[in-house]
Length: 384
Image (cartoon, rainbow, N blue to C red; front, top):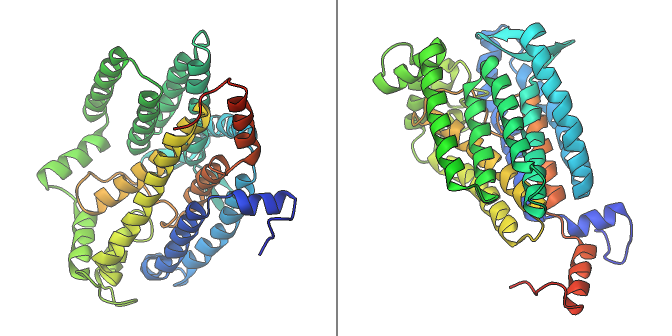
């Protein structure tokens, strides 16, 4: 245990970190590693690999991901902005390179291969994009003559264009939803709400008209016709699990779900551990979102408020999309369940997001002391 009397980076971190956030993130990663034992062996065996191939790789990715989360959590808000700017520039450049030199998977160019590893740059773009947009919105709120909102719109246009070019409609929708939520918090005028809402509807109609794979997924979801094998088996796994599940290692439907270790790990959890266990997972994500929004509501600094709200909305919306697909409430999107699904890029990128949240929600005594000093001098009003 670190004493309150101690001084230093580690002691300051220990006494200022939000332990509830930290516990929730570690719990989700622990559940993900546990579920990898249930979900990944059938996939590995179908590919002719060692049964625990993906379990071992999951562990390999988990260690640097945790290190990244803890390392970023030591940062100050200014360091968070700088790190996000560097990460955004690199990830956008990598997304451009992926369009020309990336590995094509299922008709999309989202990956860059480096040796035996593959990196999905768009996963690292998402948290950096949220931080930079939060900074732009905050700067416009602080000084209206600064065109921060305009720059945020231009940045969103660039990101959306790159995602559509891959194509990756799921990530485009996720990014648009989070960006729209942050813009709304920043005081989006009603005219912009109407214009951007119309643009979103027009974009979806355009994607349905000109992108065959998008039209195919929506048609299969709406009509139930065509190749719905993966969705049907995922639903069967959930139904078979009932409330309490079949027991660890006793799932059978999971063996025929093609992406059971990534997009459909929630269905595997339902079959082996039951619907009640899945409800616990949902409640953990809900807790993270609600605690983040509560922190944002109480936060005085605009940048921190927008950034924390945007980051937890990103986590919550991504988990909602993944779970919705598993429950056949949404068309298939190819999106992982944060901190639980297998995937190196996804795991490390989500830990970057978690690290940013931990860094921005730390209790900062020097900030509170400054606010008290200003209050005594009559410069600012007391917090309600």
